[in-house]
Image 1 (cartoon, rainbow, N blue to C red):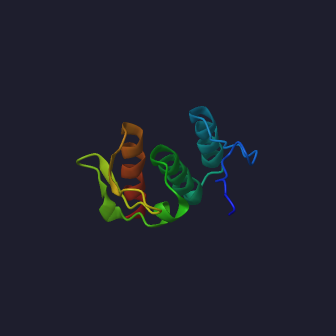
Image 2: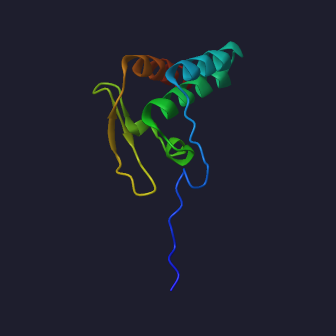
Length: 105
């Protein structure tokens, strides 16, 4: 009989790197410095990805109907076994989303 051992980050020498809040802020500022519509859109997307821990596919599935600016929350459809649900929006997120809706519509 063969016993299999589950791999983990220590046995595979894999390090998980995450961006810090200051690194995300620098990234957003760098994107905004490019100017134009796409830089604004991308900076909003980066903020939402970071704050809510979204995967690419979860971010791609976001709809305006998921955003409730009056209540200050957003509905996130999770994948890979996570639970979908409402996430609270912080003040700066609400401001950029309001600006974004003004630009889009």
